[in-house]
Length: 209
Image (cartoon, rainbow, N blue to C red; front, side, top):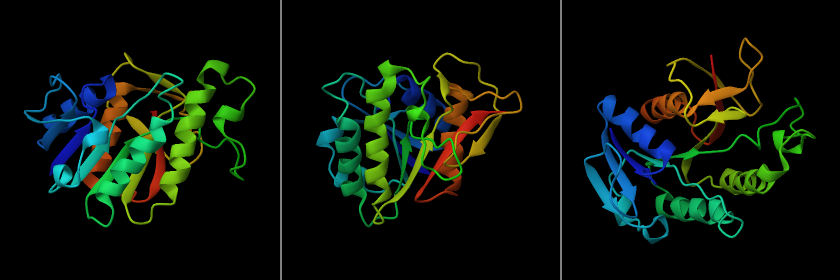
């Protein structure tokens, strides 16, 4: 399987590349500068400079883009739109490293994690930007996309357990009543979806078992 990981130098991007390479996938890192991932093949371009030709021949494109400053937060939407336009009408699947703030907390899907009184104020702009990008992604019936939300507590340096629970649109808790996942276990779930393609045009979520 041929997989391109966009923004492969990021912390999650590097773990996804590492996991995919370990599974025997043919992985290409898309990076702006020097490749710091485990991929041997590289496309050195800014995400916004990618062309349809750059992504030709891949089975899966994994979008690990992240923006954190107030002025760059809108790029969650514009970057995803750009990738969707490049892959429109193709068989290539687009998998997106998503956020947890847009997960629903009630069966009627009227309340999201970011709406909660205890949701940190500092993270609301990020959650809102990512939520809007997901809303726009849902309208793209011309792209075989999958959006993977992490658990509420997304731990960059958390343990790699190799065990996770796959959820859907709602915040899922494990047997301990926790909503937590490490970057490493998230990478496992992402590569599983890349290899299996079981949730096309769906948002799914993941929590450690």
